[in-house]
Image 1 (cartoon, helix red, strand yellow):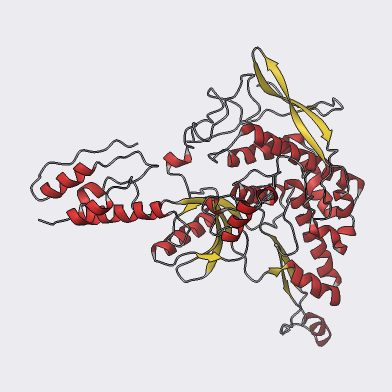
Image 2 (image 1 turned 180 degrees about the vertical axis):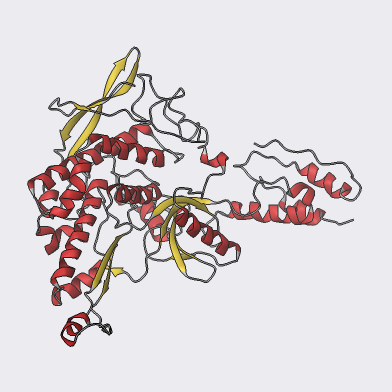
Length: 503
C-alpha cells in the first residue's frame, strides 16, 4: 500500500479550484489513501455541474427599419431579453426594462459552462489555427512572451516552431492584475493620474482587438489580421503563485490518488481569456517603408494601390476611434519589382515588357487594443491619428472607397446590425456594463456620421479629422414605471478640447 501522507498532506491545504463547482475534502483524500486497495465499490459520481423600428436624429427625420429575425441556434437566449422570441438587438426591446449584469454578483457567461470556447464553426480555418496552437502547447512548444509593449502578449507557435498568432490575455493588460511589465506597474503606482486613458474601459483591450477585426470584416476593408477571443493556458503565461500551487497540488493528487483526482474538472493551469490574432509574415513597421518611399517613388500602379489600402486603415481607425495609431503599429509588406522568365509563345518585343513584375504592396492594421472609447478624449491628451501627417492623408477619398462604404454606412439598419454584433462580442466579458457599452456605440455612431458626410463631400482624411467630433446617443422612452431604449437618436457635439492637442 502506497504512503502519500507526507506528499499530499504538505500541499493539500490549498483551495483546489475556486472557479469550479467542486470541493474535495482532505479527509476524503486520507480515507481514499487508506482504502485504495481494499475498496470494490464504485465511487460516487459528482453532479455535472414586430413592429418596424425607426431611426431619428435631432432633425427628427424618420428612417424605417426592416424587421429582423435572428436565429440563436443552440445558444441560450440573452439574459437581458426576459422572454423567448425577443428581438436580436439588445436595445430593441418590448418596452420592458433590462437589468444590467453586475461583474460581482451576476452569473457566469454561457461560454464558461457550454464548452463552446475555441470552437468557430463558421470559420474552420481560424479554428484549425487555434487547434494547432493547443496541440503545440501540449507538445511543450510554449508561447513566447513579446518584450515590447506595455502589457503581456505572446507569440503563439505551431508544433514546428513557426509563429502562427499573437495572444494577448485579458488579465495581463496594462490595468490587469497579472501584467508582467513591472515598469507599467511602477507607472500606475507612482503616477496614477497620468496612467492609462480615461476615455477607455479598463481591461477590455482584448475585446477591442476582436471588435476591430469584426468591423473590418463587416465593412469589407480586409486590413486587420483575423482576430477572435479564445482561451489558452501555458506555463509561460504570467500566473499567480497560488494558481501554480493549485495546479501542482492537483497533479500530485491525480498521480498518487487517481480515485480522487479523476473528479477534478481541470488538472493544469487555468486557461486565460484573450485575443488571438493570426500572425502575418513578411511585414515591417509602416515607419520603415514610409521613410523609404520618401526617397524612392513608387510606380504609379503601386502608389494607387497603396493609397487605397491607406484609406482603408483611415476608415477603420476613425470608426473605432483608435487612440493608439502611430506609424509603428501598422505594418506594410512591400515586394519590389522582380524579373521573370518569358514564356516561349511571346515575341522578343513582348518579352521585354513581361520580364518585370509590378511591385506588390499590402498593409496590416495591428495593435487595435486601445479603441472603442466611451467618450471622446477631452482631458489631457487628444490621442491623434499619426497618419494624418502623411502626404497620403491630403488626397481626397477615392471613388472606390466611396462605392465600398457609402451604401453601407448610410443604411441605419446596417449600422444597428454592426452595434448588435459588437454587443454579442462585448457582453461575454465578466465586467460588461450595458450603459457603458451604449456610450461606446454613441461615439462610434458619431464617427460613422462624420465619415459618411466626408465621403459624400469628397473630403480628404485630414479634413475628416478636422471635423467637429459628434456623438449620436439613443434616447430613453418611458413605458409605465420603466425606461426602455427607443429608436430615437440625438446628435450632440463635444465642446471640451484636451489640454494637449498634438499628443
